[in-house]
Length: 131
Image 1 (cartoon, one colour):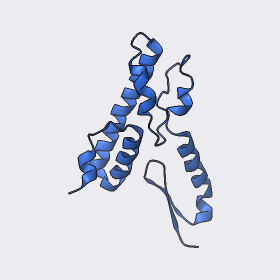
Image 2 (tube, rainbow, N blue to C red):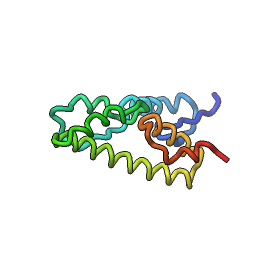
Image 3 (tube, one colour):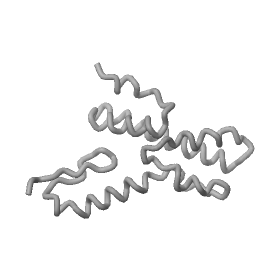
Image 4 (cartoon, rainbow, N blue to C red):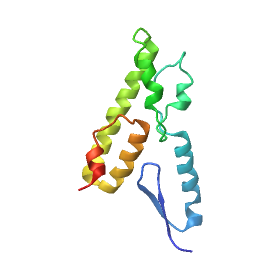
């Protein structure tokens, strides 16, 4: 059989080898992609429990789920959700910036995923435009 390369949900090469040998790793990566990466980890939710399932960085527009909560300034839980999202976003931007410098090809994947999740992000428009 020809060799195969498994690229993980983070855009990095996870493993190389023959396809049968990579089956378990493929299954694990698919599970990660379906679950997404929790953004609200550590936030205790009562009113907004449904966000646990919907607000994950799986490539969907998650910003649209957060924006209405920003207006609820007297709602501590809504504000905790917004703060957790903002922290995740800043961390993600830092990771993308590092990738631009270390691995531009991997950075493009990360930028596209971030822009799908948070359409208002404009910092990385120039790196996507190219020379």
